[in-house]
Image (tube, rainbow, N blue to C red):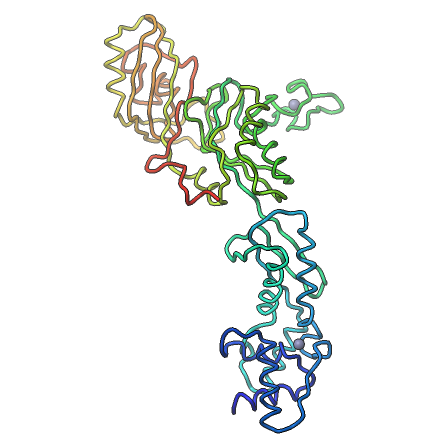
Length: 426
Ligand SMILES: [Zn+2]
Ligand SMILES: [Zn+2]
């Protein structure tokens, strides 16, 4: 059976539009639309038969019921749905009505073709509407992770639009103590701010244990400039609430949901955040990032450098302190889950490396200690020994009780590579 014979038999099933006819032969040749394929076959059959040429109006097509004539209309509706949204990439998907799927199967059955010969309706729809959307809005197709995803629900006669999140990477410094990284709902009122009909005593009715958080000082401004509906803060770990984050800062990503602006001025955002946070928090190196940066920030192995103010219960000699810190530098430390850590967490012993340690005696009972260690090292316990739960420890080696009275994180850097990799920036 020849190609023309197949085409004649398909055309004889009833009015079949050029696109529906051509779609059965979509795997033949390149650089043609299915409508061009269908029309060409019809023309060739008419020439071969030396019969008058008769075209078929799309509206009369029994297979698609006229849908193949609506590409322009769908494209215009898709473009209108995102009129006030800024984006560079998009993707079009189509939900094929079950009736059309059935018609497509029946059409192919007529000529004994494979039920999925050529190309399915939704692929043609995706491509033809997609092409037109691209022309209307000047954006590019991205099959992996587009800024905007359209789903054409043909039966419901509706365009569904999903605006994917946008991401801003940066590093923050926390210059004041007693600021949590993320908002911390009050445990007495579960964040409601009320106990019964009364304002909650514990949090003063705010619902939060702290007035400010690093997240609260940064994320709303990013959300605002990107004109999104929500923002999520992702940090590369977190310091204790009472620790400062100084030095080169801690990597973070703010994810903005459903942003209407993407191509923002990050330098201006940086100065806006820094003005808003009034010196409590500072951000720097802000850059637009890809969505993969969220996982990178959360998962990349990072070492930390700390500076701790340490108080001893008894006077300590400078040489003994130097000796102990030299012994700890390069040591592998065993740490049983600290007593201060959430009791709901499983208790276990873990080993962490101390890469380097130095100490300066400020007076016989006070020292300033700098520690560079692997991620997850409990520094307060490395100093105190945590009643023998951390071994070795500074207190243990000196034979003097010791505790951290103030802690600063000076650096959070990837163990094997820097967080800032161009492949993760937009
Ligand atoms: Zn059709
Ligand atoms: Zn409360």
